[in-house]
Image (cartoon, rainbow, N blue to C red; front, side, top):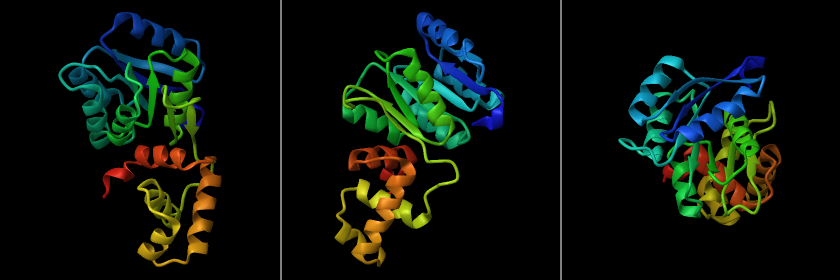
Length: 212
């Protein structure tokens, strides 16, 4: 994460109380610094271009551009900045839309501060974090250091997330079922996930579910 330097975080939220709470959380950390706090999506996007933060924490209910539209703009225009979305909605469809928009993490406003800090860290490390009522507990996925997915493992994970069986995947990409199972197993080990639901969330965070 940021090679031992302070992780630069930018906040875009129009609620003063929440901005103060996030500032206080980050101020207590010795590995993070809040480089800017903006109240609108337009100013937030402009400041991201100037401050080049590692992570942008954005409110999903922003005006002008809503949080999900802003997440998509950030992911397109400033891909080095990872996005964490804060939201009041906790239904599965909304969370999946947030991840599909390019956000690396989604945190409910009912969550504790520690969970937001975990989400920021996970996003910065190239992983993902989901905390909503649809998750029995927060789901944090960070590929183990030095263990990124190979192209073939990523292909298998994407097709699994899209609902294909091992047999269908084998047919589509010209592998044996045994090979598909091996790639899937290695990917799960690298990502430290145990279920298809977690693979789906990881694939959505990568934007793979939009590549249909």
